Image (cartoon, rainbow, N blue to C red; front, side):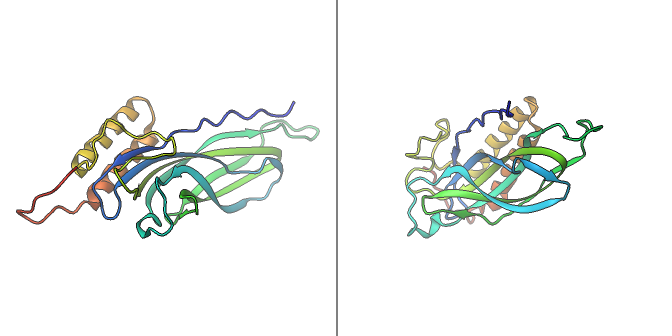
Length: 219
């Protein structure tokens, strides 16, 4: 029987309203699952390549004529989510084959297609010997983007964070991200907790307080 790959459970995009840095008004939490190998007979050579894959993030009310929607800032991490290796097909060999599968880098440069979908690019390397092999990666991204209207509004059916208020202050945003990190640590999701802490740091580094005596306005 052919190998039955596990179902890829699509994760909803979570949108968090933020107050800048301009022109960004939304922080999207995006989880992308992508194949990183071709399930094929391996030749024992190290294969290095660059892949660009679509993510679940589609910018709400996307307009290619709106300059602020043509770029995003993202902080992403990746893990090998699933790997499958067949038995070796030779006499006097066993299943203890040597292999290598790695995600070497995620590029800061990314693109948005004509439909407003965000694509992420990463470098992978693989090496298998005399087996059929395949693997999937899970990429977790924190994406600063611009969406017109109330931040977090969407007509794409994706999940928005209803518990947060529009125009949330960066300090409050940082506190919520750190609380999320604490919960992820308790759940054993250490890599995702580190991402949440890094996102909190990125938000505060990007925040520019108003001049002394100036009032801040939050929706």
